[in-house]
Image 1 (cartoon, rainbow, N blue to C red):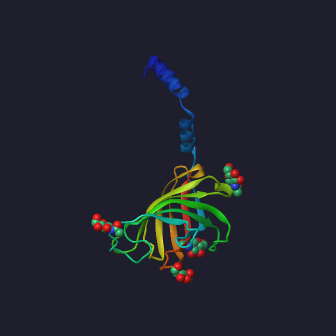
Image 2 (tube, rainbow, N blue to C red):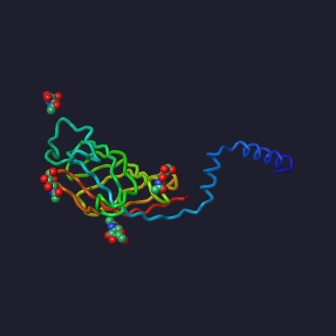
Image 3 (cartoon, helix red, strand yellow):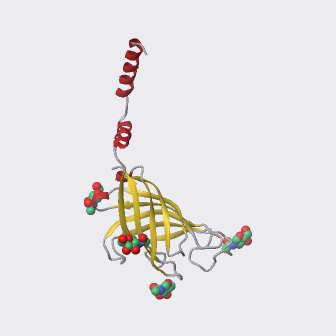
Length: 187
Ligand SMILES: *[C@@H]1O[C@H](CO)[C@@H](O)[C@H](O)[C@H]1NC(C)=O
Ligand SMILES: *[C@@H]1O[C@H](CO)[C@@H](O)[C@H](O)[C@H]1NC(C)=O
Ligand SMILES: *[C@@H]1O[C@H](CO)[C@@H](O)[C@H](O)[C@H]1NC(C)=O
Ligand SMILES: *[C@@H]1O[C@H](CO)[C@@H](O)[C@H](O)[C@H]1NC(C)=O
């Protein structure tokens, strides 16, 4: 480049820079940060039974031949607002809630596909959340979910959650699930 085009280049750059929005500044500052890893440990309470369910059936197929007789037959869709606690009891400290839905997705082995936002309401991650979109073979005692994004301090998150069934009532579907989450994020 000669000095003239250098100058043009610089001026163009200054022009573009001065038009960078705050969103772009946010993105730039994220780029400069080092990725960090956070481990989260909590219990999710998915309560289908009783008068205060945290998971409600919103649709199911007319033909329930597959999986009929179990609380989540193939094709059924549940909306959830499940409390997350720091211990296994429902009376333990609530640290957030899991909101979204799951669909019973397998014709043979009971599996749910989750589309759920896990939002936290205490301490460092108050107001932040992680997004899970993953299949969940609930009858396997230990399983894994994919974390595909997040909000707040978990912007651009990715990671995985190891799940362990703490308790499951096969009759009414109520479950307490232990989560060990490994999340990579920047803020
Ligand atoms: C299911 O669908 C069939 C055929 O469309 C209909 O005859 C039947 O009444 C439906 N059953 C229920 C429970 O809605
Ligand atoms: C979490 O954040 C909300 C909104 O900023 C605030 O009202 C609430 O007091 C915070 N909770 C805790 C436990 O810090
Ligand atoms: C989660 O981590 C705790 C503590 O390290 C461990 O005792 C527990 O077995 C783990 N559970 C799962 C589901 O990975
Ligand atoms: C499982 O659910 C059934 C039906 O609601 C109930 O009768 C039973 O007591 C529950 N079992 C446990 C261990 O809570």
